[in-house]
Structure formats: structure tokens, C-alpha cells
Length: 139
Ligand code: IDP
Ligand code: MG
Image (cartoon, rainbow, N blue to C red; front, top):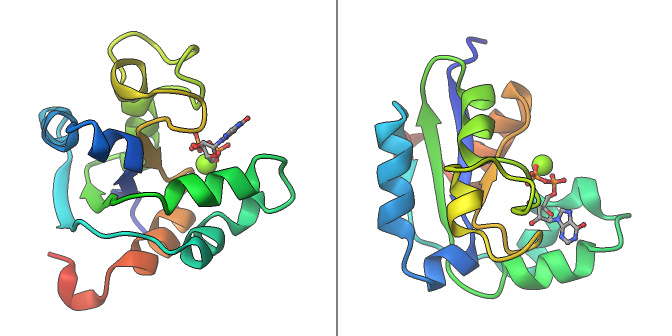
């Protein structure tokens, strides 16, 4: 599978703060093409499924509460070397460690409410994209 797709979602803190437009603009200006996008909301159960890999971590319950606390904007993005380039664009998990000019550096509120998700592998990009979008919603 060619490594040209990734999955992202703008998290509840960034949607609430009115940053959908600013973040989407940065994503497109960095050369990513939006192949799927919607405004939606996760239930606590669905947030738990999405982050199941973290279920033993101390922050898991808080994370599921936070991720189901308000609307989110999931997207499938296309670009050469998408997964790695997108992780560079968003910056480190902890906004205090995120490089200057990255999305998390500019918009994240805390290590938990860190504005945006980015897949960590080609395999997870496909799984995560399919978690939110059916085939007819992908362009
Ligand atoms: P990532 O989003 O940069 O890939 P992960 O380690 O996969 O980071 O963690 C998933 C999400 O869980 C983070 O984006 C953040 O919202 C939350 N998180 C990660 N580490 C912590 C923590 O130490 N405290 C609170 N929340 C955390
Ligand atoms: Mg991760």
C-alpha cells in the first residue's frame, strides 16, 4: 500500500475555540488534499474504541470523556509521505514540547486537549479512516 494517506481529527478543544478554519488552512497550505471530512461527535463508547490501544494508560478515562465532550472534525488526507509529514506538521503530543509553528504549538491547550490527532502508521491511517468514513464518503 502506497504511503500517501493519513487520518486526522480536529479535537473538541480546537472546534470549541473556533479553530476549524485556521487548522484546515494550515493543512491545505502544507500540501495535503482533503479526501473526506465531516463534523461529528463521538459517544464515550466510540471514543473508547478509537483509543483502545491506550486503555491501560492512567489518562484513558479522562481522554475518552474529553474526546466525547463536543464535536470533532475527522478527515482523510492525501499527500506523498503523508503519515510522517503530518506528524511533523502537528508537533509533539505535549504542546510544551511542540516545535514552533506546529498546529499543536499554535492551538493546543494541554497535553490532553492538544487540538488535533495524527495517525502514527500507514496501517493505522487506514483503520482510523475506516472508523469514521464509509467508501462513498471518500473522494
Ligand atoms: P499522539 O496523539 O501524539 O499520537 P498518544 O501517545 O497516541 O499521542 O496519545 C493519544 C492522546 O492521548 C494524545 O493526543 C492526548 O490527547 C492524550 N494523552 C497522551 N498522553 C497524555 C498524558 O500524559 N496525559 C493526558 N492525556 C494524554
Ligand atoms: Mg498516537
